[in-house]
Length: 171
Image 1 (cartoon, rainbow, N blue to C red):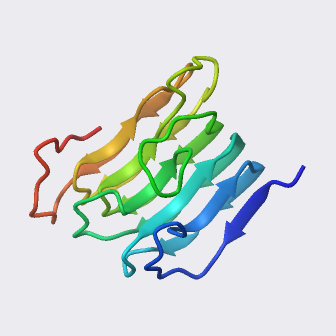
Image 2 (image 1 turned 60 degrees about the vertical axis):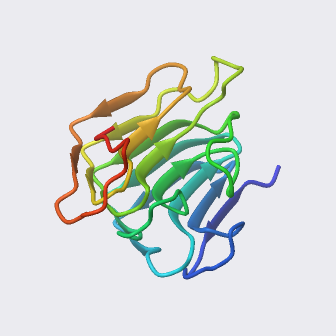
């Protein structure tokens, strides 16, 4: 069965093509020490997980997205079942480790969605040791993760972001 990993140069104004790195059903991938900048287009998601992506490590990367975004058109890291609509639930991603990255800007810094109807999917995801800055609404947002979600030792701040969401939260 074909599982897609897509890396591309990035600056887009196309809503259904908004991510620089797409991990569509991919497994056993490590992305280490990449610099990803998706700040210039009308849309910009740094890394996107979907379709049962599993056993993936994202570590030591610098992800930069828009510091002026006030909608979810810009997000550093996204796990969701649609590239155009947040949230869309499903069996999206399990055993994903987001470790020691720097994520700047976006509506969300990190967004992990799961399945609203199946509590046995989207397991063992880890968000550890990241620096998440200058987001608009949530630094780290996760919902419908069934078991084993770990969010630990992340530095979440808004040192230069002047516009505020009414729901602004560290995560």
